[in-house]
Amino acid sequence: MGKSFSESYKEAGVDITAGYKAVELMKEHVAKTMIFGNVPEDIGGFGGLCELNLTGIEKPVLVSGTDGVGTKLKMAFLMDKHDTVGIDCVAMCVNDIICVGAKPLFFLDYIAVGKNYPEKVAQIVSGVAEGCMQSEAALVGGETAEMPGFYPVDEYDLAGFAVGVVDKSKVLKKETVAEGDVVIGLPSSGVHSNGFSLVRKVLDVENEDIKTPLDELGGKSIGETLLTPTKIYVKPMVRLFEEVTVKSVAHITGGGFYENIPRSLPKGYGVKIKRENIKVLPIFELIAKRGNIPERDMFNTFNMGVGMTVIVAKEDVDKTLEVLKANGEDAYVLGEVVKSEEGVEIC
Image 1 (tube, helix red, strand yellow):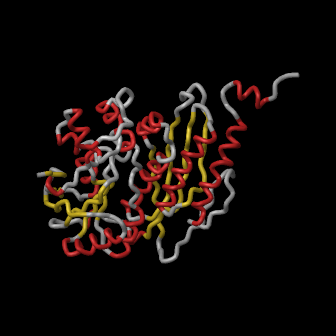
Image 2 (cartoon, helix red, strand yellow):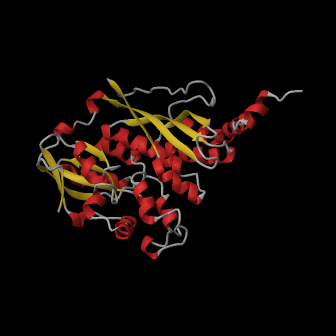
Image 3 (spheres, rainbow, N blue to C red):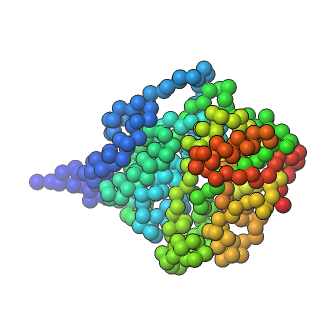
């Protein structure tokens, strides 16, 4: 008697039954997010559903964002810890969406694995679900693709896609930014999910000890510090949009200060930031020291401790700081908007 199809497919490297088990294990994590968007708890269908609540919205504008975790995943492989990178995946998408003034509605993930280990996939999805909970977004679906021979059996890739909504009248308009407006910084939780190719090379994470606690990192190891999930700014920013007229927002991702802040400015304007105001995190000081990296290059690559910047009128600064701090963000003034073609000046 010949082999069954599932047996033959398994010998080719794809285990169908493992896929079924992975879906069952992830259901409990996904179900937690269904409170957002009145989503039916039917995981495994061909399309994810999310009821669109347009209360208070006259002209809805859908805002989408997609991103991955990048080579930060290498840290998850090295540490054999897979329950936080999903938070990074969600964060990289929803933090972009709120820069437009939108509130995330739902999220979908894509996981490609060399071999489907159901428990590992469930750990990854648990992080995605946690990121969705922090974003008040529903995890309405996704895809887990087993790709033997394409990825090593112990490795995977992770990407995601988010959709949010905002009233057309409330879409942030950087054209309203004017000279004298104030730039406020929201602290990052660490390196977030950008610059890891450089980080891994500088800190030689594949060969050096990354599990021993270091005093210079506050008693945390390099591995633990680098795996710290990207901070999700949705809740404090949504509250801020409700109480303050925010002019512009920048998500400080790849390209650091010098590439991202100018994206939130109209032509002919720049920002002047006081270097002494920036609360640089210890991990960036360690990277700069070990890699002998010039400070300008550091600010042109990493967030340096500032994950998001907000621009408001001078008269709204106190209220902005008050609202952000009431919602868990120890925000602070970085500098001001000036007429300039330089973009960002750190002095």
